[in-house]
Length: 340
Image (cartoon, rainbow, N blue to C red; front, side):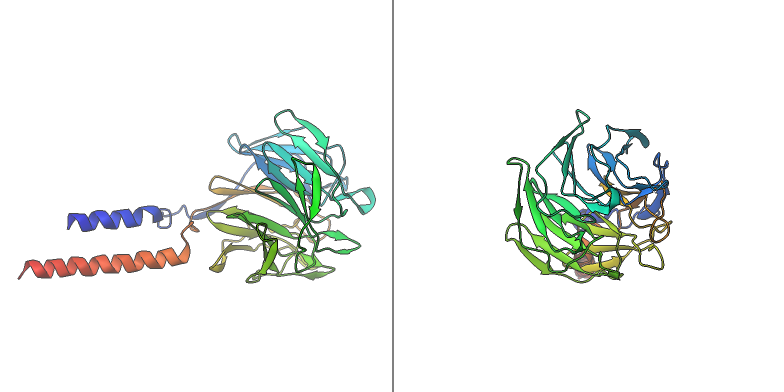
């Protein structure tokens, strides 16, 4: 009997967060960003969130670098970017923040690659991206930077990869669905590109890029088609927040678990589009963005905490249930046997 109880404890231990009361999913409002803006981007270096570019509440294109220390929950500023940009793509690797494309004054698409050294607080410039565009999405996968989609005269399908070692770009297999104002996340070495729009039509596309084979796979669509959204990974799931259409901003928070599908999660307290998000620990930080469609701005900083989506997923919970039933049957059998 003691052995059976010990085995049951071992089975339950990895799932302790699932059953924790009051701590599975919550939102928390933090100190505001120093300046209200939208259409900016962010990424993480050493548990600090670097927020760059965007459009301010005075309709100024920003070159600012705001740094949020997630340990101290405080804001500071870094050296401004060499260019004023909005609708850029950002990604971090090896202590450096890479800012790709976007729009300069007059909504001119940029091909610039700006590189920020967070340890020295200085900027340098890499080789220009082959296709100038804004409203794109960017991610690092195994040391290489992928720039996907965006807009330049038309919605784009380009997938171009930058190698920091050789300071060079290379075209890769294009994305199946042309779109801009899209978002992306990397999970288990695969790059997932979600949502966006082509013209004024929002997209529910969810497509996965495998860099090892240079191929794309079309997956289960996003439940709520939206653009100007953001995504971050947490505990084996991709969480997709916010967005807009011509009539409203979205509060939706929808989580995708590869191989299992979409789950509806607790909505955002304040719907926004053109916001940035980054994951640190068991929390996703959501920063800035417009509270109304089109040109609107905020300095809102929120923290979303979720432990209800574990690495194990629904299948593992089913296995746990079967294991518990099996243990109960074994225990009952042993008790009955002891009376004979």
